[in-house]
Length: 541
Image: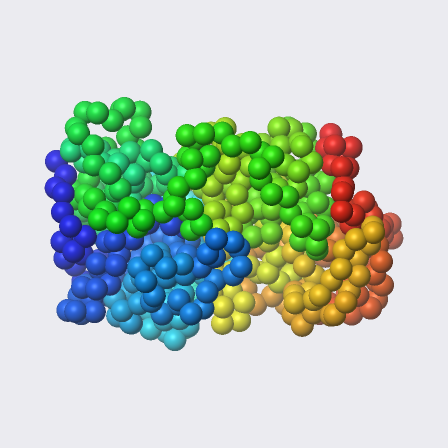
């Protein structure tokens, strides 16, 4: 039976060198009070030290405040315990180097202090595909040797490329190339989990954990099972304590038999539902929100890109929307009044409804179903999606797309590799040039001041999507505000340009290479460059 202890007592249970498993996305599932206690103990005693942090999703806080305005750099080195920009896994870096010795995750960009340490080679940093990590927990818990998959072939995760290593001091081999029945696969070996550090909403007196007010039913069970079955311990932070045998059995997501210790948070505000919301009942299914209350996007280049991506939807599609610009496609479809014509999803397990963009990415308004990320990645890996829209970091002439490491900026792939590998129709969305000043309206695009960041380059700095490894029958588009490209014969081919711009001056001269140009080059639909569109219904068939 679980013991109820303080956050400080929980911190003393974690030994030096322990492998610590996390579950959640953003601040959902994040045990903030325990993490702060671990940080404080390390500051005072130098222990625990050399931890190996393992997480499947981003467990941090971009520092959005009440609106998506970018993270607040002034909060990077600490700040108040509930301050935006200082919550999440970045807590472990606030005590200085040494607490974390190794860090393996799918997405690391929002844990700023740990990213700084990784850049300075003060800890080893590795990034693997999100679905691989999330389902590897399940393989470990079931006593299997690891995960065999094609996900990651040809990307920076492939050991013949970088092996998922994100900095110079990273030396471990976390991935192997193997041949199985004449085909090439990647094998991700399992490992021992010493501590599962998790969070739910409610614990009863027997330690049964409910996710009642969570927006994501995270992989906490899989991480807890992996820890228990490899000799580790399970620690769960919750917001509320309930009398035993009062929680509905179907609401229990982690049985008390797997839980060793429970910490009931002193401050409820250490249990945020997302980075931007302490609690939004339309995310967790308590209410259904009028969709008319969701604000439409302002008319700018971002909205144009989202509209053009939405034109690729087909009625009845099950689609995935990635973080950043792609998530705003949901707002476009909702504004057009067609949200019931397609089923939108995110890798966190949201199915249906209107997926939220940052700072609550991973949640959805009025979801039809909430499944676990394990289940969602099974669906994705099996080819169950019809289409996905993901972001653009930098793209090269071979169609490779890098979203995981831009120079010294470390981010990781998130679910990008799993999703782009296994989905038949893939759209990458982003601006052609960064930092440009543009004007949209009247059915055309005007460039007021040219940007300074080339996103279409001769060779990407890291391969997150491999154009070479894209299946022949996979349709891949790259949608920008100025032009649309298509991967044809593993080469980037220009197929559309925006009305109001010059092909040579505004597109080709702003690229680090000359793409193939379709003999049937078209102009993008001028209607998507107007204040009111109303044209999605005609193309959604």
